[in-house]
Image (cartoon, rainbow, N blue to C red; front, side, top):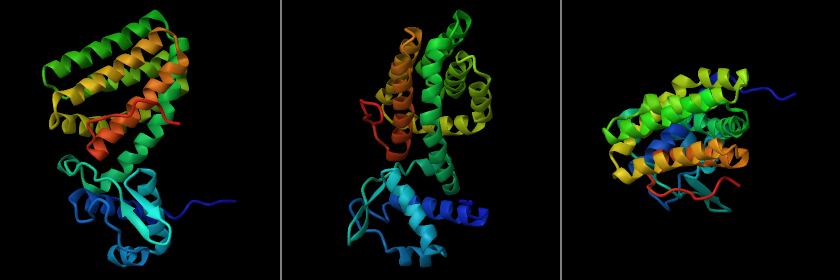
Length: 242
């Protein structure tokens, strides 16, 4: 039977992840440069090789580094250093994992909402989308309207489990949204317009009761949100996850 690692070791793994993330973002570990070895990183952060290895695996999963056989790990992307203007270094790993979960969970919720909604629930979703658009035109963060848009989708599933999980994640989701919206204000207006377009695609698919399209549009939206935040990217993927 597989057992979870001790909480202290999990916390240390998060710390190594966050520290390496920060060093890449700051440019100390430059793009295309080779990272120090697992042994060197372990000494630097006071962590065992298994802990370092797991942190590096997560950085690879997040597209920040890649391994080259017989050569070590290399930096492939530099995340947006502005992240650390709004959050502490220790929060980065938690935010990433929340986005990982949301991609699958909220895509499934959107797919179900497309088949389950009733007029009153669709009206709430449309109102939240309109409020979000209006808030952006006023130069506001629009976090409340953004959260209400995602909550309305959970409500439209008419499934108490989706509704309860979405509600339990509300604080974490708003934290990520607040970071994302603050970073967007530092970018050209086109970046905010991308979010509006993604919301519109989700809403339209739900309105048309197209479950597959709604799920794909939501997965793409959340993946793009994470990518814009952590990679500093202005462009976005144009296809859903494979």
